[in-house]
Image (cartoon, rainbow over all chains, first blue to last red; front, side, top):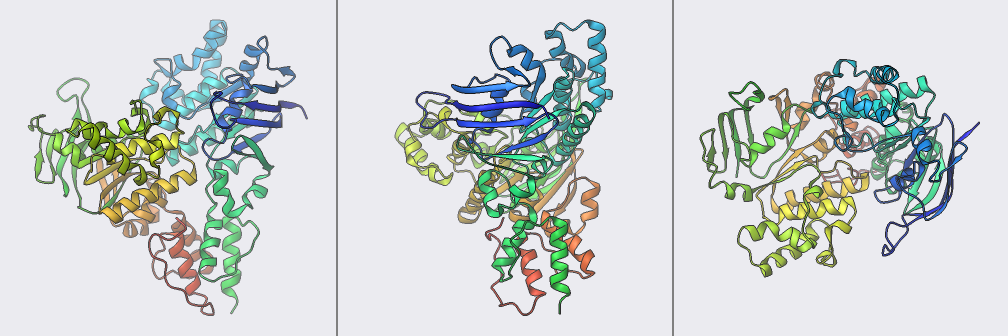
Length: 279
Length: 299
């Protein structure tokens, strides 16, 4: 498989006076078509790491490659066309006065011919199912709708990679579902690679690989099942515990001996059923 | 101090072609010393309702009673300052409102507006920092050198510095990691328990409602569609699902377990601790342990 992102020995410090590095010797690579999650507590360097991928942050040391292109001043704009980012606060990323103007903004900057632009804007808006809101003012949409418009803006640029930087953390549960569903569908249709930075366990569970950051270091990497087996330590990895893990801890405080392995909701129900059916 | 709404309605830009009704026909009561959760989707009117709790907005219909003050559409905007002191509102992303050069000055800004001296302001700031889980070493630092979570704590300390009787929190943990979220929720619960502070929490997290609130108000399209004790409201999981509001994780899991076991819990478990206790009670051979109080380790 082709590597879409290669990061080698990245080190970065925001200010000389900071007592620690924001990133310290971080290396990882991501294959095209993967869905990876980056987790870690606030301040662990997740967003900093993501911003190195499209050159929003230039590391002090190390090498960034997107596809075959090393990130250099020359390649910067080519790389930004390949990498779309959706940020946490939907209100910080609107420029257009209507949904369709907003989605068109990126294409205008790339001087895409008008006819093609109209097509790409409409198709992107359709993909996020916001077609009935084309003429609406982005400010008046719900949080989930706003993030879907932001995603359409990215999709219209036809990137290879989309980075969600806590893109659902400000949304209500309904908005969260909408956005995740949208990303899932688009990923399938467009064969995108997705990097999602998140504190949400359900969102992390969608990834095929999870990277764990702590204090500027990449400390662990694994499948969701491998990572979730960390039990109580997950909280220090910036994730909430899955419900079965919480229940296991509570049960052991009530004197039950519980299995060490990671159980899904379903697995937990079955385990309790077996336990309670024994007489 | 109780806050009571009687037939409250609010229409934005009333009497213009742009008028839009945000609230109507609202009767509710925030009892002194209670912990109320206010729940509803985006656009249900939560934010507009919040602004009525300290008279930032005046009802266009009906009356809002805040302690012994009665606020109607006719109320003069003067002399409302005292209400703002008694009811502190922490808006969403309050860290965006920090502006002073030092943390101590930022926290003392409110009290100084109410006549506290420089010295008194400093004293207050010093007392507030531990309440929000920071220490004195932060006093002279710039608020802009802090992490997002720490900045939010400073902003909350600024509201607490006014010594409010009622603390209103609009999604106070949005954007924090789970550890930070839990610490902050425990901090508010501590204020509620130790200082008998009345809390109004706007949230989408049903687990927070189950863990902390004793009263729950559900808003939909500008009016109250249900209010009461969380335990009663969560009984009707189907109704909540139909409103796309969901139930606490323990309630959802208890439902699945009941179905699989074909057996019902005597009392609906709202929290993980309650669920674990009831499951343990079904296993009579276990050593008996004391029931965990609300405030257990596993919220």
